[in-house]
Amino acid sequence: MSVPKSVTKVTSEGVEFTSSVDRVNYTMKELCRAALRDVGKFICKRFRQQYYKTFRRRTGYIGRFTQYWVKWRKEDVPNLQVGMKPNAFYGLYQEIGSEKQKKYGLLTKATEENIAEIIKIESQYLSALENEAKALSLISEDDYEGGADS
Image 1 (tube, rainbow, N blue to C red):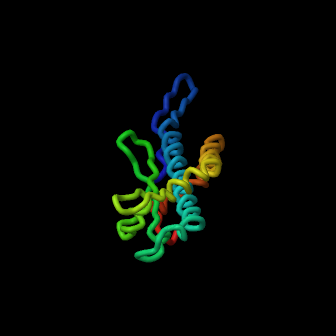
Image 2: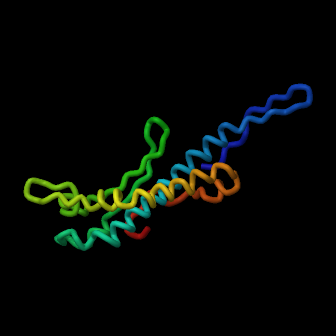
Image 3: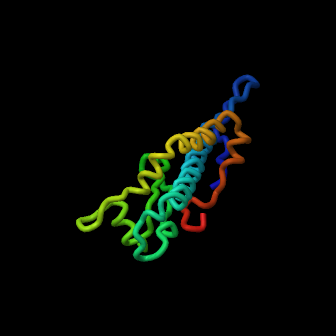
């Protein structure tokens, strides 16, 4: 999706006003998406580094099945989901618990323990609103769903 052009131009006695509201809205949404993408990468990486050994291994390496998704909601606001792929069947049971399995909640702990770093990542992107060139350089059109290779 490319940057929208300014569409409203009003001329009054030689003075031209250009509305760039669409461009600013686009930049804000894309910066939010980019910030959430980097937060998702960070959480998955931190989980793989710290907590994957705590899981009882039944079906392989649980870090390989950790993934993030940046999605859009009806309110036109980006949303980050970090979770496990369907192949991590027992890993999901160990994360949320079940009747026979104790709840570990390690993905939740990885997120809660790193809130300061998450805020730092988010503020890095949202502070780029002051400079349009910096904001556009931070926006990339790829990788809004990450798996084990991200």
